[in-house]
Image 1: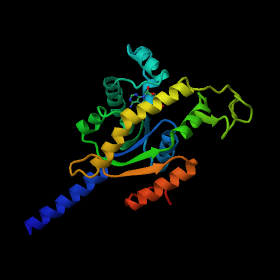
Image 2: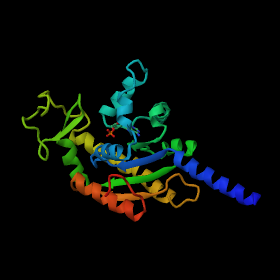
Image 3: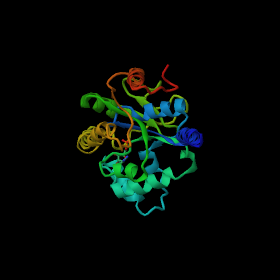
Image 4: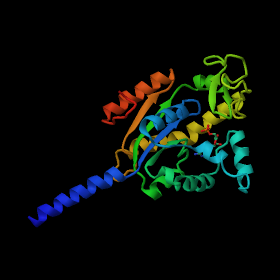
Length: 248
Ligand code: AMP
């Protein structure tokens, strides 16, 4: 009888611990595969804050002695050194708004950055790996124009503003990211193959490890429209028994 009561209590304790544990979702994909757009939508449907690593870096205070080096690397399309990323992400994740979990866009991007997850024994509910042909990505990124104050994104061919070079809502000028020129895009894609694809491979094998931090991984073709990418992600997650609010 005593043993029975103990087991019931243990069960209740584990269920409530699971319900309270933070949810982490990770998006991996070459520049231009649409991690940001996917992350935005997932953030709304799942009610989880999105951590866009490049935004975390951009928002570091100008007084930070390493800010100039970081901005320089970002503009030239080079990865920011792991130690700086580790520090910036630790500070970001410590904020109370991430107590229920987070969606990672652009992290981890190197094998060294995986240590961050291992050190914290973070459980990643699922990883979405987006892939597309390099030529599609070059076209997407080279034509991308941004309204910086709002973050609205346009494309000169596939989603042009009503008036060339102007934001539809405010009429303010659109800008091209410094790292969205063809030479830098190709360099970023090479870096992705070299440094970040191994992170995707790690995630795939980690999901099979009994003590792994990754629970599920889905590979999604991001060559088409955003709607296609979203519905493919939903179908693949459903096959893995992952049910999302935005996938019905
Ligand atoms: P993104 O907006 O994701 O294309 O990132 C823009 C730039 O931010 C990259 O080219 C890097 O310079 C920097 N960056 C973003 N995330 C990371 C990361 N996890 N590790 C190193 N550098 C990063």
